[in-house]
Amino acid sequence: MGNRVTCVDIDPVKIEKLNQGIIPIFEPGLEQMVLKNVKNKNLLFTTNLGEAISDAEIVFIAVGTPMGDDGSADLQYVLAVAKSIGQSMLKRLIVVDKSTVPVGTADQVKATIQKELDLRNSDLEFDVVSILNF
Ligand SMILES: NC(=O)c1ccc[n+]([C@@H]2O[C@H](COP(=O)([O-])OP(=O)(O)OC[C@H]3O[C@@H](n4cnc5c(N)ncnc54)[C@H](O)[C@@H]3O)[C@@H](O)[C@H]2O)c1
Image (cartoon, rainbow, N blue to C red; front, side, top):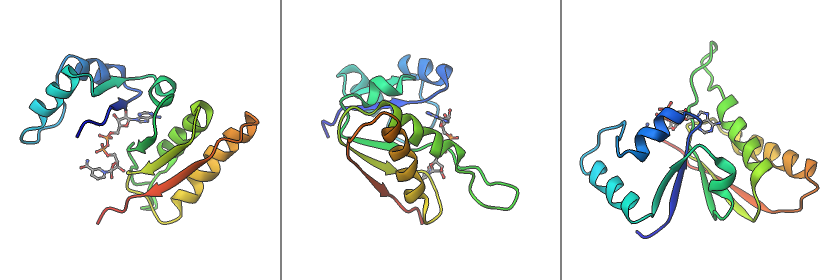
């Protein structure tokens, strides 16, 4: 649709493969769509979160939420990304949680980002949005 999208992962092998046009998931039409948008520079892959969000307007968190021993979702990866966002953001952001998380997680994401901004003495503003999966 013409948006510029940068995908971030901490796994350098995954990012390297994506940059080589090797797509790890199958979905009809996905490979052509990815290759076309990489070619026209609307789609980028990187391990550098700070660089990726420096001029972003919207950030989607889509890391894993594995089930813990008691059946609840393990939020450590979601909150680790929230912390990195708070440490790196340079302008107002909309942060969207796309990971599958329980009600109340947006409050934790918000508090985690705000804590990092406070440590930076930053008055940057942000909004947190949750996408529910049914
Ligand atoms: N797969 C789907 O179709 C689907 C659909 C809707 C929602 N979801 C939800 O999205 C979430 C992710 O699902 P998935 O199947 O893509 O999981 P996945 O485990 O395949 O991918 C998660 C990725 O996050 C990366 N990661 C971990 N910590 C990171 C960090 N700090 N910074 C950047 N990247 C990091 C991992 O290296 C991994 O590549 C889950 O909560 C899932 O329930 C998935």
